[in-house]
Length: 505
Image 1 (cartoon, rainbow, N blue to C red):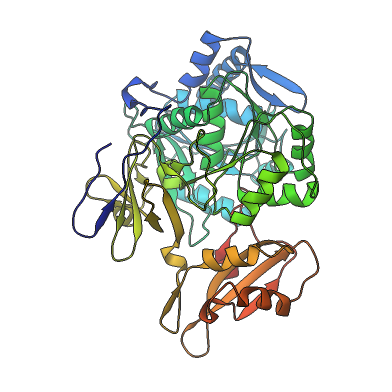
Image 2: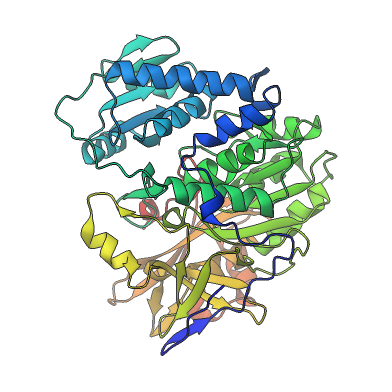
């Protein structure tokens, strides 16, 4: 890949994925819905989705996609319309996403666990032509549908058609927007990220190749498909490979562990908080399974958690980095070269990275970078820089081999007595204590006009603040240690599992 240099820039060495050359975007299908069509043509009887004891073949998924596309046309959905889908993971949701894409409409896939206010804000911003609810798979979707006065359409419910909303212009190439994905708002107000068919197909193809997915694989589908990680890397990546996705409406450590122990799954992908719950539920004994690959992403992976998960499954826990605006994958540890450090791996083939000084911010460029924020030119201009670069807002460093190390978010940087404190470093020290399940560190205004370091901690065994402070004394400089440690039964989290620090700050 071509790597930029210049004043204030540090370029990454070329990525060394011997088994995975760059995916040529020109060779990819035009729409994400073509994944199902091609899968049905290649192996119509192969399992595509499994849900609650039932399996959908690729041929059946294609028929369901066409049926839902016909329903959308009958409802009056046009190319360029936004179709809002309120759901939790289920086969109907997958078929609807592909159906929307096949019409050149935009899917706005929203997790049903969001509050009524959050749902209303997204609906007001994106002005959907229609809102659909997968009520058979989600009690929360049913509650939202009833409040909205939606009518029953088979296994779905539909809100009233909006006759005043206007469709967006349609492009007859991969640059057509496929999905409007709203960020979880961990550091501010959620924004609508416009991801094109080309963005999502590039990530799906690259992710499935880097993970070595095979048609015989059975991948866990527990991550919310409403989140970009669950949508692109997990759902689209699994089906792109012709493998089977085992759908689960929402995460349950007990249910997922049962699937793993029963040998149902060969691939598990999740956020670190999910693995922490699995560990707490499974205990210290190793877990026998048919797993051949485990991957963590979506938020920083603590080294102690990584080691514990690897002991539990007897497998490397691969790590990666991405963000909604990059569709999401930027980097990943290599399948043939797992790492024991805190690196999130090298940039995936076809993606360029650079570090911009003096802040150390990571910039990214490639076929995965979003088209922009919907109806927000100011935020788009702030994120998308000249030359096609995406300013991530994350601080990173590069290893000698091009591996990325993420230090934290620029917006989360805490200034105390003139010193810079990255919450990730403090969280890693806290999480290394055997009684700490997970933690979140934020800066809060102090009486002297500076910021205090506040730590919110979820524990799995009895421990008091004094013991944690003593633990940190030999691991952190005095200015990095929390002024306050607050114990919580559960840290606030988005449906994806990402901790919502905005609620703590």
